[in-house]
Image (cartoon, rainbow over all chains, first blue to last red; front, side, top):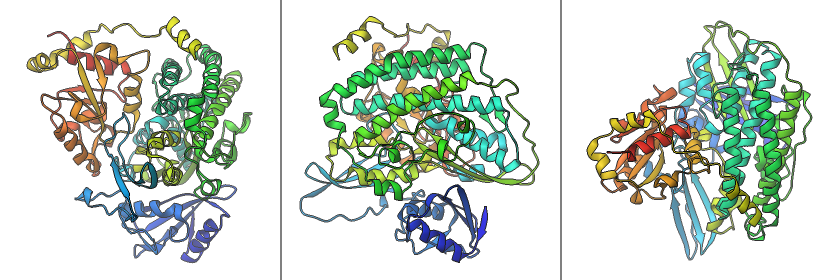
Length: 464
Length: 167
């Protein structure tokens, strides 16, 4: 962390607006605001604001707007010059009184959807304004699953905080636990044993494969092609069962802990994962071919929900959302944290930016993850799986880890008693949600589920 | 496409019906009158009232070919107005309280509420947060609790079958 003055803060804001650096996060604590920036590496800038005010980043750089609204709701920090003064995570006593942006025009009508949706999904509100069938504006209202994570982290033991971190977004529990552990280890100067590092990689790739398989099936299902969902559902279930057999939990919750991993791979774990790899390699290509050859399916995904490369770059869109729109960033390679610094893999990038491109990126990433799993199994080091985390000692740490949907940022400060003083976890969804509003514009209402699923942003990860 | 379809038919993966003392135990915990009214077919409306999405992933899995929920007469419906059962997850957040209450009111009687997951049962790791109301039973009456973080599809299936099981 670097303490900066208001002048430097403004200078950093201008370089974000000019596109010289990428905003990774912005969050608060009482009387202090932080921003994380990517510029060859992760840099955290901190600004004291004794009077509770600071110069708004969102005034010049739109991706910061929702983050600043959230920090104001949670810590009362007032961003001077912020163009959108409405609350974000704090719904107040009268949640229905939220002032949506006005839309004017002849023949326009509005469709309110949520927070309780028709499917088995998380809650959020979408306000569509449509001209006939065409969406002219989507406005999101989120925060329904706000659970007060920043508050719960304050004063938590490292063990409890690790469990909380694993429940920020259930589909990325491995990635969050991984990022949290790395941040703690960096704060306390701990080096996890090599075997633990490699097992973390194994779990992270299993989680990525499970999510990509499930979402690929679900994207096709939202184009009414349920056969793909059925087949991908079987493969996804195989991954989860393999994870349960190897690490004792289907989603691998609480297995990655600060200092290493809590469960070692059992003796038959290697064979179980290799047989899973074989099964996916035997079955998945036929499904990809089916996707490619089904014209009615391609008709729905190709050219739908296009996200421009310029917006993806400006918002620092992580994961397949960014990589399908030409943004060549993957924390596994761009940061190169272990074990990925010693593994060979490609980061697929496309430029079309449509639903099809986002689906294709996931297909290619499954292939890469299978290869990564094999490499890790081949070279899995022997030895301890965990080192002790000293309960006393203070420090500050930051980590960026690639979850299946994009990079997860964790920043934390440990107090001298060895408890978490402050911790902030930023999901990739913070920067992807606003882009979904842009991608749906000009598409028909009926294609929204398809676009939404191809982004698959997290509500819980965003609402904190 | 035909080949892919046929291949699915040749190698079914569906699990046998779980026969488990846990189902009997859960069933016994249900009100007898409730079981008489429920009959053998249920429409379920899922409500995420604050979950981390872990429970939703496993609830989704109930629809995959391994668990195939619909063979038991259980199905998920899109509207609370079509539902017999609300399957609620998450520590109820302040911001979802009204949504949950309204969904409950929109569900016609007779209706039952199942709280799924440790958060729904007792707020889980989020206990003590001023942003959370806590257990589902703090907001709407709960008839059955399925614990787990998240409950596995088998545990969920056992719980839901308990709703249907022998009177």
